[in-house]
Length: 147
Image 1 (cartoon, rainbow, N blue to C red):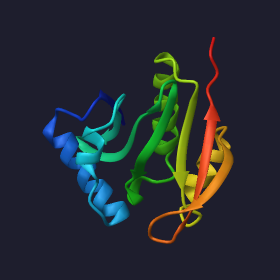
Image 2 (cartoon, rainbow, N blue to C red; image 1 turned 45 degrees about the vertical axis):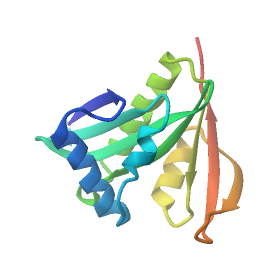
Image 3 (cartoon, rainbow, N blue to C red; image 1 turned 120 degrees about the horizontal axis):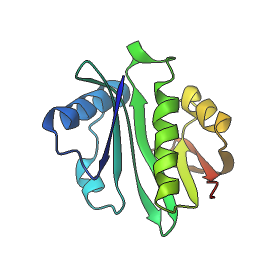
Image 4 (cartoon, helix red, strand yellow; image 1 turned 120 degrees about the vertical axis):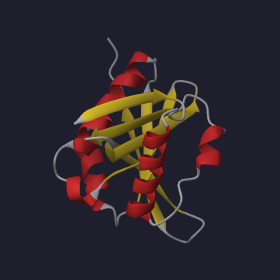
């Protein structure tokens, strides 16, 4: 497995297409790329197996020193192999190197695997809200350790 890191939207067309296709497969919706282009501090990571994107993680600066882990997922055929954990580990390492103090993410109860993964890796539930589709969302945040 190869892990690729892009500060900004990937300039390698087949990687970007792989991420877009994988997002559609997992969430049955188009990744809002135009929204991402408006963000600051964008980090896009891809897990690639034999030139095929099998996992991704996207985030951006929420506010100064605070990072938002926005979207991510792993191809169902590759789940339970530690890919999401490794993408998270690498994202948090990058955030620490860039001086971020916290990482925040939102998830839904129906995505139990992601909720459990976040809790296992030091996130705390700090709140909930109902999104514009009427679905409850869970807000999680993790403080990053600094040397």
